[in-house]
Image 1: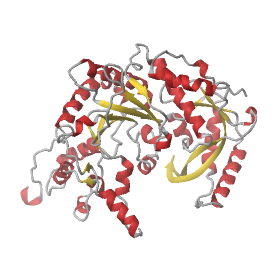
Image 2: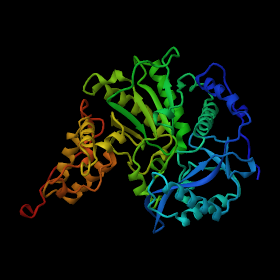
Image 3: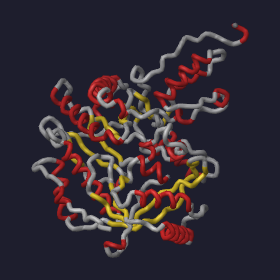
Image 4: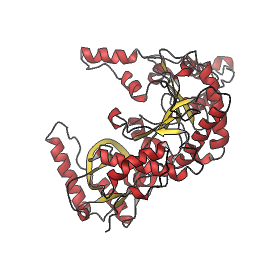
Length: 469
């Protein structure tokens, strides 16, 4: 098999833009460098029913070691045309060799600080190898739905030769930006930020917005609000163009500053790709890995933090109106089939708003104290002190749980809570004994519920209990 070398000279560079400067820095680094890997299997992470069978969901890993080009299992392919694509070309694999390497990896891990509780799941490895071999050495998008659904695996970010691979991904995305920027909108709107791997965000591509005279927008990002765009990743190119057009419109019209300070786009993972009708058996995987569910994250400027939220709502309404006309109405199939974002309020088909802190901090605050040391409990309570409950959402839940409310009325409230707040399966009896965890960490202590931005219309309560019928 012929494994293609990656050469940055294939990229079209434009002089004087934030895009080209970032690309030009990498040209000499990547000339004549092969980015090739051996296929290995990491430890299993959770049990997932796939096609009616409980099999371990595991990630596959690519490792780099010194070897001749023909010895590697795969090499990256610089052919991405969309922001959500990273291609590998695999040689034909021997399933028995891959299984043996997985067993060896688990044995080595068990001898160290990791505890190995599961045996190597050979059926999943066979599925992975079968899928790869079925492509007859054609390039495979490892971040695509087809690959993840067919194999039951996705790429582990803890990849050997990590910096080289991340630089490759970064340059593939720069190439895509150059490709779609026909009107020079992107290079006039954003500056690509340095790699954020050291800040524990290796899967994200960061961009800063420019002001009306081409400078990066100054100041900090908002501490109260974050905006997520939850779309199907195959529409990322279109989303980028419309975001840039919106930023340019803000600078041309009445707004005194750019609404957004910066943004990031994550590499697709199951939490971004999952849709319930087709991803049979993956629901628990998405629940177990809820972080970063927003896919595209927009960070507002901190100028919007200095009131009770009225200014932010005004600006969000402006953005929502633009986005609905220019993206959601134009690309209706970009919308996902449901709300999969925890701790977010759905503002439109694809726009969600979160109050400040990320999902990881909230999930930490929800941990139970059982078995913790005094120091661990103190740290946990410090996390909890950052948050407070949402009176708005609790008021909807109280309405849902009212004695005698009709089935149709309860269904109406339940659908709204699921669609707008990702709150499902409400147990009214359980709520009388303990609060609903997610709602209790919904707001930051210095933020307030944003009424009129995302609300439920509560039907009038007509008591349908036996004494009133």
